[in-house]
Image 1 (cartoon, rainbow, N blue to C red):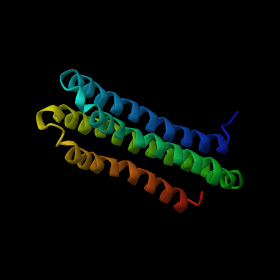
Image 2 (image 1 turned 120 degrees about the horizontal axis):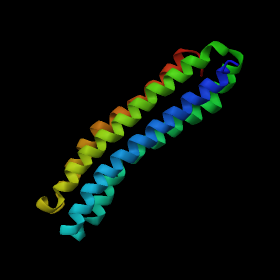
Image 3 (image 1 turned 90 degrees about the vertical axis):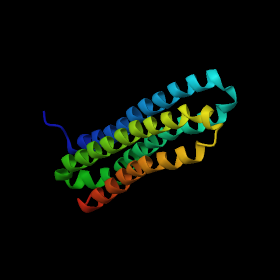
Image 4 (image 1 turned 60 degrees about the vertical axis):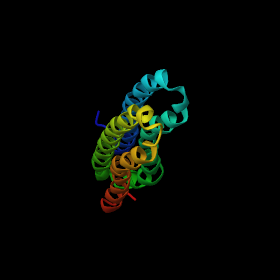
Length: 156
């Protein structure tokens, strides 16, 4: 039995969400691990640690948005145009990679910032957030490019 194009499209959306979840989990774990070490030395840095450790979580939301767009907007079109099933799956795979890598590397940037909080008495927070936002931009671009690709292939 062949796989239906609708199943391929939904699989693409699910993979996009899975990439966001996986990357966010790894990124948060990296940053939180550094946070535990910092809090052992300077418990007053809790607020700053939480802010930086939470930043890689956003890629999960981008993956969820892609899943919702595929299920609500692309699915009705894929039903009428079965040839689009594999294309939507491919978009989901690319989106998953963008979200996963962005979140993992953002976690590394945040972990570095967290490790310097005690030495700088928290003054590194703004700079660390700004540098983490550069990596975040790749996750945002993954979302935007996914929407653009879905539009260009005619699935939106």
